[in-house]
Image (cartoon, rainbow, N blue to C red):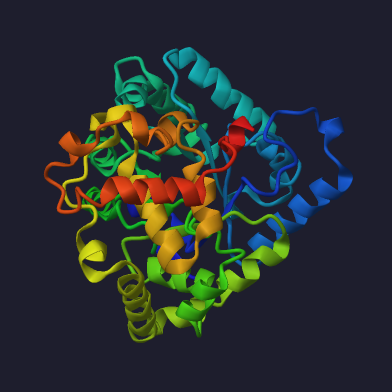
Amino acid sequence: MLYRRFGRTELQMPVFSCGGMRYQYKWQDVSQSDIPVDNQANLEATIRYAVELGINHIETARGYGSSEMQLGKVLPKFPREQLIVQTKVSPVPDAKQFRKTFEQSLRYLQLDYVDLLGLHGINNSETLDYSIRPGGCLDVARQLQAEGKVRFVGFSTHGATDSIIDVINTNEFDYVNLHWYYINQWNWQAIAAATDHDMGVFIISPSNKGGLLYDPPQKLVDLCAPLSPMVFNDLFCLSHPQVHTLSIGAAKPQDFDEHLKTLELLDRASEILPPILARLEEEAIATLGEDWVKTWETNLPQWQETPGEVNMRVILWLWNLATAYDLVDYAKMRYNLLGNGSHWFPGKKADKLDELDLHPCLIHSPHADKIPQFLAKAHQMLAGEEVKRLSKS
């Protein structure tokens, strides 16, 4: 395993982390007696294999249902100093409730302290206010640090890049969990800001949210050869030293194996990546046209400024991915979260275009004439049943 300094925490972080949202039994709390023996055995085998590989960062959240409780049957079996344990608790208006929820996490984990506590989902001004106002959740996190129950405090986010940078620039947090990978590089400026503040940078779910790379379409497989799409994406992310660790949401022990192939390639990333990156760009241009590929985002309105709150940027991005790389299943999964993802995935679908006049908000876009038609095509291609966030399903 390779390790990177996790910003000002000074923790030596493995470049792969064991994320805790795919191996648990349920997305809701259940009693210990309800957890099937084989499910718990698989979770324990996954953690043991991770630690054996040197992946000693175990990451979970209070919002991950039975994950913490099930980990609590495993983690105390290891020497505590061998592990870096992170959990996350969502900021709420009542800071006392935040503390109560964290203490439940600690009881479930059966630990005296966690190394990393993330304020989970600082996605907008409201959740930021709950976090940093006097007497808010961050003040509670500081009390927990003083009591020795938390070593370092960070935050996780699905928010807009500008909002993430605002949170980073408070300089109140030691690390950030955020999205950034080949198909979605919007948050690079946030990573640069985190680097300026010497924060740890943890990439959320690059194999799942980065394109469902556990089961990639054949077209993407061909474009990424000789690497698998998963190894290509890992190498792309880790070739940037500002990125410290990638979350592997392992569902079973063997889920680590493909990722491990990345480690021996890192020293040669500058030679391996350029031909693959060139092929991916050439295919996007061949499929969508160079002008569109290079300028489609120019002067697009934010979803809040769009009639019907249509999230044009996300919809067109998903349409691009589905069209250029056959990432249709991924695009459908994400598209059908719109209107149902609250502040985790805001904005609405393009299902009511006949009722909306989009032209005024597109007046500065070089593609104003095409975008309504592309939105309609995207809806036709991607619409299906509404999808709920996993923690709500």
